[in-house]
Every structure is written in structure tokens, then in C-alpha cells.
Amino acid sequence: DAGVTQSPTHLIKTRGQQVTLRCSPKSGHDTVSWYQQALGQGPQFIFQYYEEEERQRGNFPDRFSGHQFPNYSSELNVNALLLGDSALYLCASSWRAYEQYFGPGTRLTVT
Amino acid sequence: SQQGEEDPQALSIQEGENATMNCSYKTSINNLQWYRQNSGRGLVHLILIRSNEREKHSGRLRVTLDTSKKSSSLLITASRAADTASYFCALYQTGANNLFFGTGTRLTVIP
Image 1 (cartoon, rainbow over the protein chains, first blue to last red):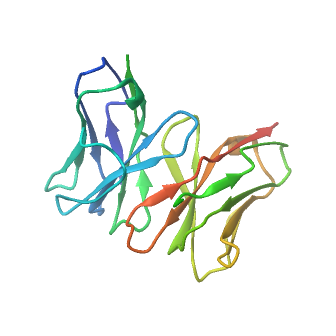
Image 2 (cartoon, one colour; image 1 turned 90 degrees about the horizontal axis):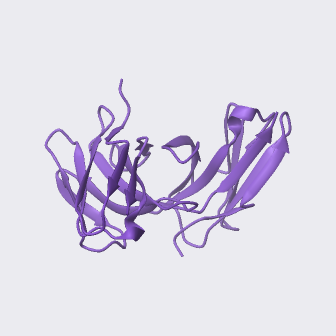
């Protein structure tokens, strides 16, 4: 049984560009949450998707948007990238958000 | 603050010794979870303790929760070099549907 997978593993972008990160949840999970983890910090909640809708959102600007597909996979989009968006982006899947299983993350570097 | 706060920030011990990490928080919780992260990669779920539980064991891990003091501790017994990682407590609040992470404890186990 495959766990949570994320792609790509690493990504380098330039300020002002847009980026899309992808996540496939663990089999049987219907909820996907996204977190941003800056270097030396704990993960910070971005938003959560359930039944293809954004159910909850953390304190992140509208430049951060997402989508969930009928197969429960999800995308995180970030527009107008800033240097401060450089971080590890973690996707977590769960059944009803209770116990979350994390993917390996995507390391985004903005130059 | 909705986040947990781990203490100490860093811990260095010899292989075979026990390691204790603490987490304090300020809000009411539904449950508290502990995660491990190796080298800035994905988070591994270690243990979940519900607000009505006081102690839980999993292998070499022992977690306690004192809701009156709003604190939890993670004890790793007979530590191994492979336990070297960052450890995070994460709070799950009723109705929040997401996790609030602290800044973590960096554990180094010296062979």
C-alpha cells in the first residue's frame, strides 16, 4: 500500500513565477492538508481539502491556492513567488483529518 | 497561541540513554500527537494521545499527557543512533481539523 506521495522532490523557481505542487494521498484517505515548513521551524498549516472543497485555511495569502480532484489527489499552487516562499511543502492525508500521514515533501527554492 | 512549545530545543545524549522531550500548550485540545522528522524530510507519525488519556506506550516510546498543566512529554528509552531526528508535538483542537506544530526538539544520539 503506497503511502502519501508528492512531486516534484525539489524545485527551483524565480521570484514572480508560479509553481504547482502535487500530492497523492494514502489509499483510503479522503482529506488532504498542506503545510509549509520553513528552515528550523515547525510545519504551518496552509489549507485542507475535503470532498473537492477547501474546508479550512490557515493564515496564508490568496497567492496560495489549491485543488482536490475526484480521486482525492491534490495540488498546491503558489502565484507571484517571493523569496520567503522558500520552504519544504508537506502534504498530509487522512480519513476525516484525524490522524494525518505525511508525504516526503517538496523542497521549493525561490531565487 | 495555538501551537505547542517543545523543550528543550536541542538534546544530545549517548546511545543507550533515555531521552525526554516536553511540550507545553495553551489551548484546549482533542488530542496531541508526536512526530519525528529526519533531515528535513517528511514527518513520521509516532503516537497519538487523546485528551482523556494520561499515558500511552508504543515500543520504546512513552507519552504522557497532563491536561490540567497543559503539557505532554515524550520519553524514548534505550536510545539508538537511528533515533537522531527532530521531534515535534502537534495539537489537534476540536473543530480545527488540522494540526498546530511547535518548533521541535532536535535530538542527537551519539554512538
